Image (cartoon, rainbow, N blue to C red):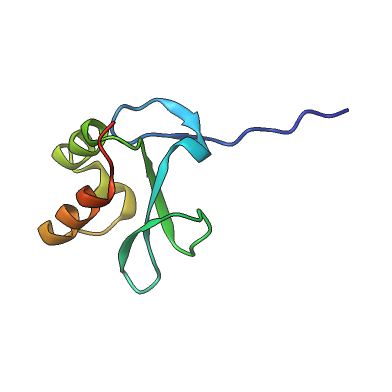
Length: 88
């Protein structure tokens, strides 16, 4: 029997490859709206990050989320995303 491939994604904060289901997906929709994608199936350009504030803060400080999504993210939207990411 063939083994099923486990999809891996790289966290923008720590740079580690992890199972896709362990990470949070931040999406830029075709309408240039930035949101957290719980289902992992929303249309748009996605970026993955660990579900902790340390990785989120590293990614924001280095401007990695904006670069990955190819759009400038407003400060109020960053605060909103930070509230949704729980502290581990």
